[in-house]
Image 1 (tube, rainbow, N blue to C red):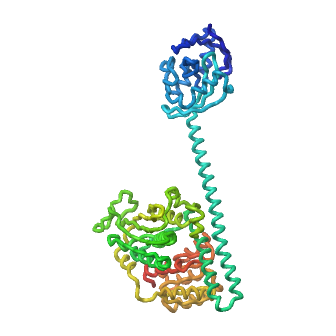
Image 2 (image 1 turned 180 degrees about the vertical axis):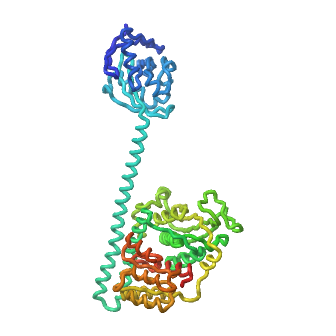
Image 3 (image 1 turned 30 degrees about the vertical axis):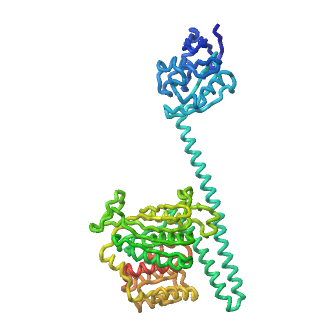
Length: 557
């Protein structure tokens, strides 16, 4: 005899049906009470969720192995994308083969046997639909009534949110690790400066040089870390300007190879420089940024190479045609005559593990904290290089194997410099360039003047703004270096006065020295006629590189 069970349908109204089932696996015949058919149809048809009645199919042992579609409402047809006449009488697994693998059959069987809490909501993926379905089931005789809805959009939103939360947690953890590392990197040289100065205050002449060098080296390390942090911040904020100028690329590469040679020789490393003559010498771009990328790569190569060699190479892109002075690269983003080249640094060092290479150019990450501490540095150099390469329109890549070395390559395309400008950029003048240095501090002025003199400049030093104006009227200078905090006249007024001097409104570059970066002050300086700004404290090469480029770019006054 058929059994009768009372169920609650989704709309909350009771109804009863009788399902006559076959225990032999034959298709069941649904015979609902005619008196309840209208009520049942109304409930199912009005539901916004899918509603389906399924009858269980059992094996010889009486275990539920599948379900057969008995009835489905219009919302269910819409969600599944299948019509009722195609479903009724078909098995669930025949309709969606992956249902068994997803545990759906087991959960429906548990609901039918009252082994699962009433109204328990489950979620499953249907591969054939590329969708996620949320469903709940209630027992009806030897079957179940299932309500379901499509939650694909919600599931994907949840997945995106979870991925974002995971990434945010990873970045936060990386920043925490980075701050702990920077704390160490800042305090170590600062402690060296303080201790060396304490010892210097009460030492004899024999130890003075040792303590001075200790303080100097510690101060340089401190300045390097602070400078890297500030530089990365400016790149992230998009405030680092790139002003294209004409320069000699061959000379830039050769100079950087020569600069790193002493450090390499101290470790018994050889340095090789290979330049492809097919790469044009005179280009228009940002030599300071290219120099910084190359210098960082060379310094890292020497740092992480215990034995062997370091090689820097400049090669032309295979698609570059020297005869036509053009490049046929399909991704070229510039117009006009271009040079496309690769600047690479190869070493025979310790190499980089594959799992670290994908995050090598990210800020706040290091390959290994213990390795990083062993070799010093705060792990920002490559992140800065990557940002700079992107701003230049190039790409920076790495190819490395543990214990075999690394190859870092910058692929870049730059406009060719006009022939006359390229010739001037390639020439190094035999006549010493004259620099007017205005520095309010006698000690700092003396040190800066000595630095410039050793670099081959002829320097005239003054400690007051009025004296700087007087000399500018009487003598010829190729460039000026002016501290913006002069004791008698504000630096901005000095620059304005200089630009109004007869014959001084032309190309004579003025480098302004400031104590701290400030957007408003920077704009005032540039508006007054300053060519470039340099923030104290600065390294020797920061000033020398600017002056070398500026005085040779325009030829002075």
